[in-house]
Image (cartoon, rainbow, N blue to C red; front, side, top):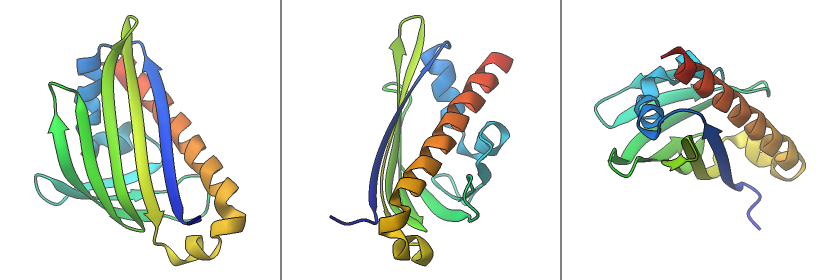
Length: 148
C-alpha cells in the first residue's frame, strides 16, 4: 500500500436548487468567502489557479488547480491538482429530494515532504483533518446559499 495515496468521497445534501449550488461551486476564486480552510484562491488564467489551504493542522497546502472539465448541463466540475498534492478533484451536483446532493471526490498523492515522512503514523490525523475541512465546507456552502 502507498501510504501517501488518498481517496476521499464526501456527500453533502443541501436544501437549494442544483443550479444554484453548481453556480457557487464553479467560482473557485470565491471559495475563501465561504470555506474557512480555503485561505486563498487566485486565478492565473481562464482554466488555472493557485490555492492555499490550511485546516486544523499547522501547515498550508499550496496547489495549482487546472480545470479539466466544466459541464454546467451535467453539473460536473473536474480539475487536476499539482504541488503539495498531485491528483484530481471532482464536484458533481444532482437533484435530491427538494434540494441538491453534492458529491465531492478527490484522489491525491501527497508530495509535501513532511507529510510523506509522517505518512504511516499521521494517516489517521490527516484523514480526520480532511473530514473536518469538508464539514466546514458544507456548513459554509449552506450558509452562502441561504444568504443569496
